[in-house]
Each structure stands twice: as C-alpha cells, then as structure tokens.
Length: 459
Image 1 (spheres, rainbow, N blue to C red):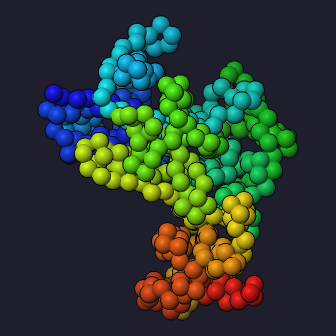
Image 2: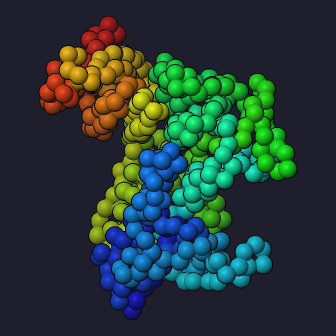
Image 3: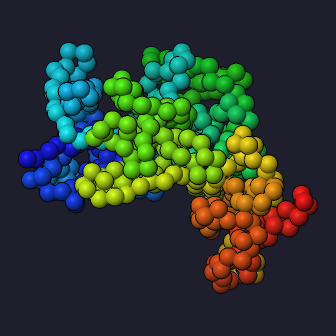
C-alpha cells in the first residue's frame, strides 16, 4: 500500500529530503508532495547578493533543479502553495494554493504518513514607523532578488542605506557599490560582523570605509520617512540619513510557528527540536534546515544557524532515514565565510565572548602573514586569530580577515576544531606548500605555533 510523504518548503532542506527519499523508495511505495509558497524551488539563496551585484546575470543560474525535473522523479512540487496548519491527530496539512489569496482563499486538506517540516527562516523586519514604505527590500528569497533588480532598473536610485552589518549586509553593501550607489551601512552594534571579536570586526569596518561605505555604527533604527509611500530617509538614534533605497540585513529567526502551533516541540533558540536523525518527538514527523535548532559541537549548546550547507545535510539525512536508510547530522561548529570587495572574512567555532559565555577559560593570539610566499607575485595580507582553552590548548575558535586567498584557510581550522585538536597538535599538520599558494609556514601553522607558545605562559 502506497504511503505519502508531505514536504513543507521547497528549498535546500525540503527538496534534499524529497530527493533522497525518492532514491530509496519508488513512487509505487511512496508518494511525495512538496509545498512551496514561492515561485522557485531548490535554488541558492546564498547566491542572491551576487545576482544583484551582477556577478550572476541570470536568476535561473541559481536554480539547481526545476519543478519539471522533480516531476520526472515522481515528486509532485506545488508552487505558490502555502501550508497554513498541521493536524497531527488527523495526519494532515491544510494548505492554500495560488487560486486564492487572503482570508477568503479556499483551503484544502491533504493527508500524510510522513511529514518533513522545512519552512526555513523568517527575516527580521523592524517594527518601526514607515517600515512598509516602497523601496525597502529584504533579500531572503530569489523573488526578493529579482524584485530588487527590477526596482534598481526602474527607479535608478542614487543613495542606498543597508540596515544590518552581518553577512548579508556586507554582501549587499558591495552589490550596491557595484551599481554605483552612495552606500551607508547602519548597525546598532559598535562594529560590523558582530560574530567576530572586536579587533577583527574593526578590520571589516576599515575595509568598508576604504571602499567608500559610510558607517553609522552604534545607532538604533527608529523609523523610515517617505513621500507618496516611497522611502526617502532612514531615522536612527544618530539622526536622519537620506535614502532612495533601503536594504534590510537584520538576520532571521527559525520559521517554527507552524510546528509550534501543531504542538511540535520547539527549543530555546526558537528552532524545531530534532534528534541526530532529524526526527521530531512526534512519530513520522521530521524537520530540517533553517527552521531547526542543532547542537554546537564546541559549546555543546543548542544553536540556530541559517546556512545552506547545514540545510542540505540535514535534509539529506532526513530523506535517507525516511527512505529506510540510516544517516545522522551530528551538529555544527559555526563555520562561515564572506567577502566585501577585496576583503575576505571567515570564522569558525567560538568567539572570545562566546567561549567565555560557554564557561571556557580562553585565550587568543593574532598573527599576520601573507597568502603566498612573500617574494611571489600576488602575495596578499592575511590576519589569523585563534581562540584556545587555557588549561588544555584545545582549539575553540578561529577568525580570518585578509585579501584574496585568505578566507578559505578557515576550512583547515574547522577540520581541526571538528576533531578536537589542540594548538600544539595543529603545529604538525601536513599542510600543502608551494610559493604560489602559501609561505613555507602556512598562516594557519603560524597562528597555531604562536598559540602553542603562548599556552606555556598560563601554566
């Protein structure tokens, strides 16, 4: 007898789950229906800033697989269809399709045997006067990116204000510079990239200013001014900033409201609780992607980190298990990377403040080096920071700010962190060397060696 898998959310986590389940169970055994409230499925949200900047010229290039391709796999993808309720007792979902909108839209019901909740994240929208003005854009979905490009083309704005100094804020600031706009970045924190230590975040502030971005740090957003419904200025605790365009980069929270309303357990981070196999506590109900919370493998605390890497792995694990296999998602160490024009930034593990909050007695060292042998053409600056435990020398976190060739070195540090290495052990890592790629002592090894030397001063 055929059973039915319903997937709520058609991006990385949801469609990975659907695809992996289909690989292991044919349509005669498992019917798969995926609901997506937007117009696209299985696309790279991380590529949206580069679409807006012009590095990617066709929105379709960000789509990994179209609905027609899923149909060939006997996966029924329903676009513009939003699930509005989950009924665990009746084993069904209530959904609205594109046939109607608003409170009067006709609702339909579909039963399920297995359910994957992959509802993603909810972007933070400021609850301030004027926040619904035309010209204020978020950049969470592919539709958002296409809409923003259309606005730039139609209205030819001259002044952009980016609200939020995280990864999206940096990437969108660069995109606006590429369009020739005057760019101001506003953040309530005293530094951009608050997931970095202040000294490393200060380097990002310097890089922003060098590119011509005006920084308004330590200023709270208070509202927006508009004329005829279109934004004309941003009001902060530091005064008014003229704006023809506003881009919000204030982060997101797990979109767990649907699960919570159904009685599915939600953790302290706001994300849906699952085990390592991505199962919720309710039989036959799974969750994956930005809507879930996971374990930070260094702090051993629950975290909700919205990244496509995690979403794909979690969805894959859920799909394999639904298909009858066995897979787990053990947790994360918080590795991330981004860039602003010629400046690259990366981090993994815990910052100094996060290490202290997790109860570690930590210390840090910072080193400067070059991305290639100093005499080789194209050698660029790189600053590497290591955070380690005072008593053991165990690596707790790392941060990198530098120029071309710097940021991806974070991967070696992430692997060391994943395996619980000490800084002393890291000094013997057999990393590759050739003048076009690294100095004879790679920046990672230089930082590890300095951290190991500093450890002796605490004994």
